[in-house]
Each structure stands twice: as structure tokens, then as C-alpha cells.
Amino acid sequence: MPNKTIYITETDLPIFNQAQELAGNNLSATIVEALKRFIKNEEGKRAGYDEVVIKLGENGTYQNKRFIGKEMARSQSFDDENAGIAKVWIVYETAKNHYALYTKEIHDISDTLMQMKINQKLAEKFGVDQEFLIPQSVNKYSLEVYDTKAELKDHIPEHLYKLLNQSQDQDDFLDI
Image (tube, rainbow, N blue to C red; front, side, top):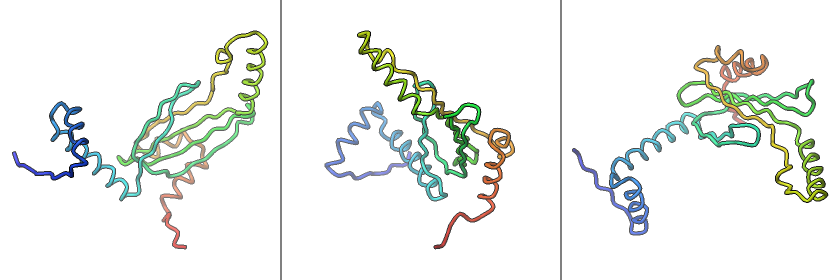
């Protein structure tokens, strides 16, 4: 097996020692894995991609997820039937040439704040823990991945699909 020698400073030695301990004494495999991630991120950045961090979940239970991509187009609308609900669609092109559709369904925060104030007064009046009465958030964040724009088309508004096609046909760089 070929050998590579890595020289490190005295101040960086604790980092290498901790990595070796966490890796179960297989520091070479850990370094290779870190270099693979570094290369993937740097190649993506050079192609215009970056790390995207999104929130997924609903009803007050959320997780953060990450992927490498670039935003292609976005749109938002307000639900006429349910006043106070906004829906946001964001389309990303991923580093693996897929289309990630991130949707946010956001409920009017003023209603939530008013309900929290009412619950605070009820908690004070009846001597119960206010946390028990705080309403659950009903916001919803989701992610779907499609292989092609054609597959994506039926899941986004028509005007967003048109915008998505326009942005790929035009050069996004403004020389101003």
C-alpha cells in the first residue's frame, strides 16, 4: 500500500488524536472520508452549488436536513379559502442533477400569538402550567425529489414551472 506523510503543527495534534480516538484507531479511513466530503463540496461550489439547510416536519416537530444544491426558482401564494395560510415552493437543482421541491405551509402567526395570550390568561386564572396550554404549531415543511422537470411539473404551480424553464434558458449573470 502506498504511504503518504502528513505534517501537522503541534497545535493541531489534539485534533488528530481526537479523530483517531473517535475513528477507532483507523485515522487513514477517516481522513479519506473527510477528503471525499471536502472534494464533493468544493466541486459543487465551483459548479454554482452550495450547502442547503432546510427544516422538515410539522406540528411543532422539526428536523434540519442538508444537501448540496442551488436554488432555481421560488413562488408563494396565499390560500383564499383559508385566510392566513401561505404556501411557498422552492425548487433546487441538486448536485446529482435531480430537482428538489421544498414546500412550506405557513399559518398566520397573529392567530397563534393571540391564542398564546389567551392561554397565558387562562393559565394564570386556573393555576395551571402555561406550557400545557400553548398551541402546537401547524406549520408544515416538506421535501420531495424528482428525477426530471417533467416529473416535477404536476407538483408546482404553472407559473413557477414556466419561471423554472426561463431561468435555465437565460444566463443568470448580470454584468452590471
